[in-house]
Length: 179
Image 1: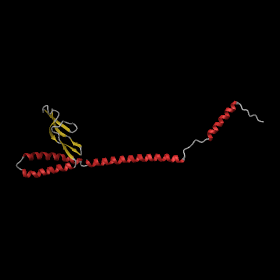
Image 2: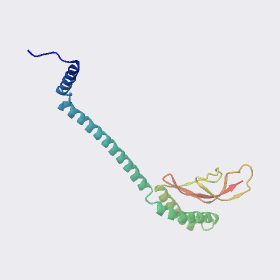
Image 3: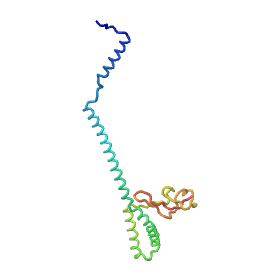
Image 4: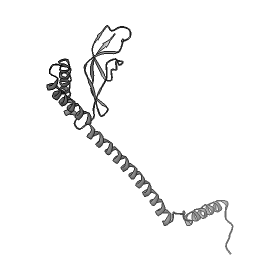
């Protein structure tokens, strides 16, 4: 008969070997194929939603840029025509001073008004400056003059009109400011 008694050291070694064997024998529970596919599906859905949102933002931004470009497409031409419009205003003022040639001047005034109307249809708008508070955002002060306490810091005279094109400032008004 064999001796079945073991020394305490052998018993500890046998227990360690047994626990290692059971750790190796019990497999770590892995994700099933279905749960893997479900997780991958969720990731793809998330990517799709993000891409769709990014594309919507791109479309919105592109549309806004296109509209802005259309509104300011003729900006250079309109800015060049502002000098002609200034000349028209000066000529109109001179014509109004001369009342003798009223009939021949009506045609000229009609041409001036037609030019103004066409430019207004394209988005051009003059802004009033006289008797307004001086604003560095839209006025360019050429000089200052004594104008009394009531007109201190206000525009007294306008040498050149200021203009907006589709609500964007394209030319500052050249003004005289009271002090």
